[in-house]
Each structure stands twice: as structure tokens, then as C-alpha cells.
Length: 130
Length: 130
Image (tube, rainbow over all chains, first blue to last red; front, side):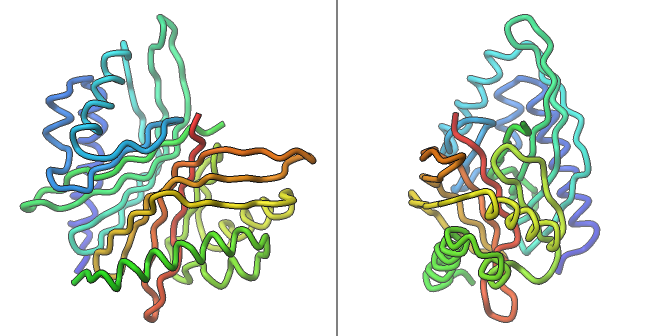
């Protein structure tokens, strides 16, 4: 049964995901990434990355190239079905790329899986809003 | 319980979704779109579209502007959790835009909900692979 508590927990997991990304710290990202496969990611403009190790490495590559990444999450909506949940939201992303501040909108679908009682991110799909 | 039959049914629903889009026929799209909310879509480069009526209208706008849309679906992976399922795949999309044939890759996350025993698409998120 889906309860509002479940939805709140998923929204909290979604917020924790963005804090981990903002930290630019691969270890913090690792701590909230799903353990079990499938683990997937589509970064804005990228092809699909598959498998936990490659997903983690792709984030570390982004962290290494980013001076700053700050997110404001707009209208996150959470849906829970058993041990799976999805959040759809829009990211207002402020980043520093090549010494310049860049602002942009990213439309996002995040999938979470409950592992040992903890909601962990299994799939992140972000796409640039043109 | 997730069975391989469930996964096959979801992969079939995913294929039916692309046939409906290729038809450029709003009625065929309507026939496979989830009835219950939430119904959502992120077209490549677009912001989030929310609600069944607006999602359907967004497809009709795309259909009205497309001469041809042909998809080859690469490596669809299906996961089923209760009445919810997700498919991650890559679309090789050939379309005609402004009288020219355009080829491109789209990274895609599709979410399906089982309504009255039928898998229907509740959310499509496609993003351009640069």
C-alpha cells in the first residue's frame, strides 16, 4: 500500500540525491546509489550509461569537470508502487563551466528502489529544456 | 511477482507505443495512453507536459508537424514491479522535418501502468543524444 509517508520518504530521497550531486563527492553519491542492478543514468545530452560501476564513474567524471553545481528542484511529484518509486521534477541548475556561470532547466525522471528499507536511486534521466 | 511473461508483455506494450507514434494518428496514441493520472511526457528538448489531455495534445502537435517518424528500438530493457513497469531503451529515429530526412538518437525512459490487465504508457521521457 502506498502511504503519504512513502511519498514523503521518496521526496526526501530525491532531495538527498541532489545534495549528493551538489557535493561533487563520489563517495556521497555512492552512499545513495542503488546497490542492486539495474542501475542506469542518462545525463543531459548523453547516451544511456548502464551498470552501477559505470554510472558511478560517469558522475565522478561530471564532478571532476564541475566547479559548482547548484539545484533548485521545482514541483517534485512522487509515486510509489511497492518497492519502486518515481519522481518527476524540473531542475533549475546553476553550474560553473569553463569559468562561467551557466543556468539551465533540466526535465528529470528519477527512479528509486527500496533496498533494506532505504530508498536508493536506481535511474536518473535528465534532459535539457531547450 | 514479476514473471518473464510480464516482461514480455511490457516489451510488447513498448513496441505498440512506437507503432502508435509512427502512425501519426492521435486516436491510435489515445488507445494506448494510460487512462488514470498521472500521465506525463517529456519530448526531446521540451519541458514536462502534465495531464492526459495536454499529453495527448502534445503528441498531436508533433504528429501534425511530422511528415514521417520511423523508430528502431535498440536494447529495450523492461522491469516490472506490481502494476508499474519501466522500459529503458534507445530510439534510432528517422523523421522528415521541413522536407529533409533527419536521423538521430534518443535516450528514453518509458513508464507503463497496468490498467484492467493492460499495460498502458503513463510517462515517456525522451532526450536527444548529442
